[in-house]
Image 1 (tube, rainbow, N blue to C red):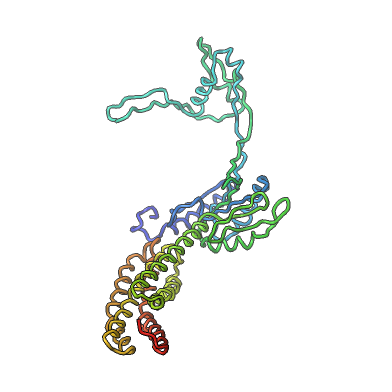
Image 2: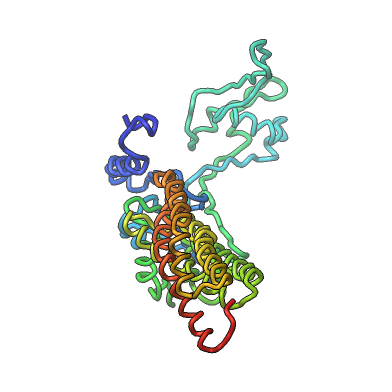
Length: 425
């Protein structure tokens, strides 16, 4: 029943992945050299691997040994880690067929004819096209012989037909050499790099990165030296591959840091633009700071809301914080504008503030309720639930605090100005 549609089963995709991992664990123990991997569709932008470490250093052979040790000892011992792999690869045995050009030329064969015969014998070849009236395109005719394995005696079984019709075994014009498949070399930013990858099935990447960083930072490197672990700042670090052996975290962790860095910059730009707009509206540099005092109050609701619902603070949660900046400022504007209008008509400071809270409470609460109810539809979404939590809890707490804190801040600031003998804004 697990292959049914999402609406027709009670187990989610993560639960199915956990069940498959437990079921296939017996197969993995029986065949330790096999690599069995279970992948889930990521909720955010795709990355090469969720837990991806890039090893750089002056000795590439030493990096390969280090990568094998980290994958075998550190990654596999991390709780919830699956799909552990590295980019070192294995030197698998293979056979190389080398054509002897002199013998082939004497018998009238070209290297292309030999390659064609090998393709027919071990793979398949297209010998023509069939025109089917029911098909809009020609249908290829593929010849595929019985499957066979390449070995020392395989060249005797492959027969070539010479131009005169003579049948010649392939061993007469070629020889078989046992070799090893080459292992790949990877580079990153013009530095040779070895990757160690994995995915988290029973935990989150942040806990794994913290645990692995504590375990690996300063650990000994084969051949001498200590390993440096980095690339966990908001600005990506540049590896010193010619001097130090370094492990840089990439994958989902690096993507998350980049996203929060860019969203943090966007949040600062939004705050500056809001402040400049309010300065132009009020003709004051001080009053906009009071109006924007409602923005930090959103955090009082955002983080406890994520903790209460046991949801992580994600990039969409940060987008919700940025969106709340404009919503809660509007609530402050309603209070401050009404207060200024009442004071301009001759009412006292305290009476104007109390009347503003009583009159403007209804539109402020209606605005908050509209935001909260409209965002509730996203709570079940795996990607945008962070946005919904930020909007719901941030708007609720900030609205309640705005009705009390913003009038108090304005009253405190205005009383100071009145004592100093300055005119009210």
